[in-house]
Length: 174
Image 1: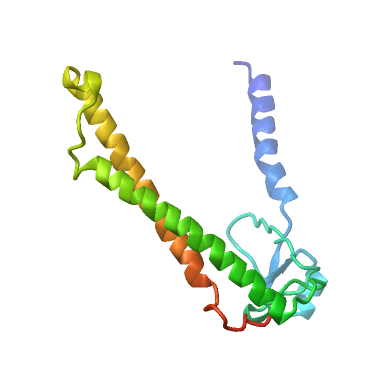
Image 2: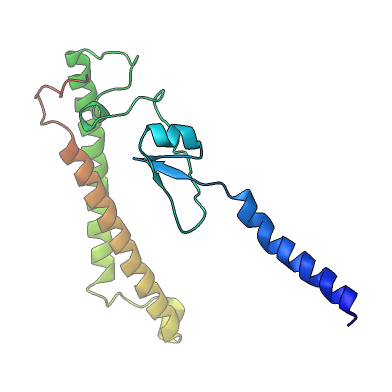
């Protein structure tokens, strides 16, 4: 390589390394805030940030920018209609009736599935006498159906347990 080319290459390399350093401004930390305004940072007694670039991501503000406390999180949204206690008890009663009906259906289905499953030894059907793998596949599918149905029963029971006791006043919606 000629000396002139080597000099140009060296100048380009040094420029490439110097540009990012020149572009980075000094950053100060003022509590939970960061600033690159030196005058403001000195007035507020901020500390300079050392050792790398700083990236600050602004978090989104929900609910019009006001912070939400845990006490207000349990309340109804602002502007939602107030429901009469009698109407709420009626709605809870209807929900309980529907859920109890679904629970009875799921329990009846579970009893049928368990009877057919026969403790893991269901009766063989048609070609399963000649093809044992079909029997094993059907038995595994029956076990999966039993497990899914049991999960459904548990979910319905949790929903029923969340409702206020029958005849009791519903919790006030704030």
